[in-house]
Length: 69
Image (cartoon, rainbow, N blue to C red; front, side, top):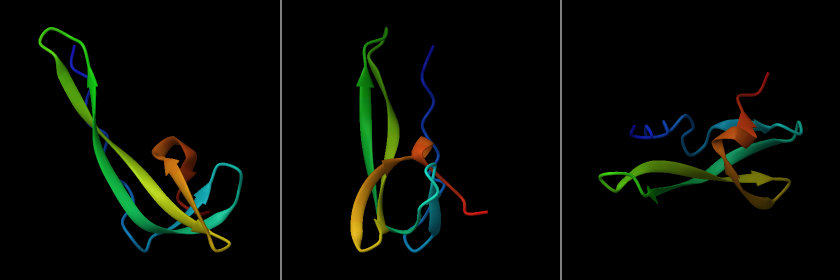
């Protein structure tokens, strides 16, 4: 079974909240392919988000950020 691509939920400039409750702004979105062995060998697209929190950049995965409440 093929692993589906992640969806890009956030864009540059979006306000996000970490699962720890910190607010930040998305400064950059990095796309990369994750390869896994399957017959046939396949890959899926994953996203990392560079989030500015208190003037420090944190590289976070989609499961580490949410839309602010």
